[in-house]
Image (tube, rainbow, N blue to C red):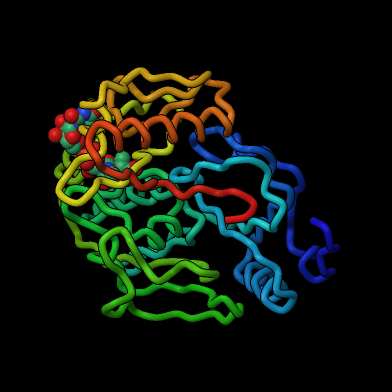
Length: 297
Ligand code: EPU
């Protein structure tokens, strides 16, 4: 950071030089130079307000499960560390954005509430899931979301019900400096045994087709319209292609896995090779599905 950070920002709990290997499921990347971890909504608001006032660019990090970091990040990074309290009111559940997504789905199942079974295999934080309108098996967050709280890019706190245009397929307007703080899901009383069975079935499906035992960031490329990125990469013969410790998974070709010590440069090189060879073979340009962080986006 070339200019000093303002005092009110530095009052927000923070750590210096945290390796992204510890902040992401993929386990690559350089250092997070400034990691701000507010433990209250007020501290999160102070962070956003100070950055807005100073015109400081910053980023928000969730569970780091859909993220590839290429190098060090000098700008402040916000990662909420709110208390993991889940509030149940009737058949509604409210949780802070920093709550684990799978853990929330499990809490709903344990409470005999149906509606979040689809979420039980999607890693990351609740905030990241809301921001992406995460979904699986024909269900997505907007189907159950009844209220949410977020900060505007200026640091104003807004609580509201979702409206049309705010959430679409794997997209929401909660980007560009907006920060999800909490979300409330409308669930339904269900049979705990049936809910657990559905969760187990979804997990088993994922477990057989995806390399979940290796460090990964989920699917790396978007499915091109009407096609499957995994199938295209597979048909190009790239399963098992390796650059250092980064490999195109032999189990699912759209997963690039880290065998332990992959570097950001190795991942960037492997992604480039996959894109180039799929372009040459199929004439299709694969677009990243993961978020990619470089210091200068
Ligand atoms: N396929 C191959 N070879 C492979 C992988 C897949 O031929 O190596 C074929 C499969 O046989 C199948 C087709 O490609 O016919 C689609 O594969 P799959 O069913 O695994 O689904 P996907 O489109 O690759 C999507 C999401 C996943 C999500 C699954 C299940 C995208 C880019 N991927 O995968 O999401 O888990 O459906 O719901 O939308 C993620 O978002 O990170 C992610 C993994």
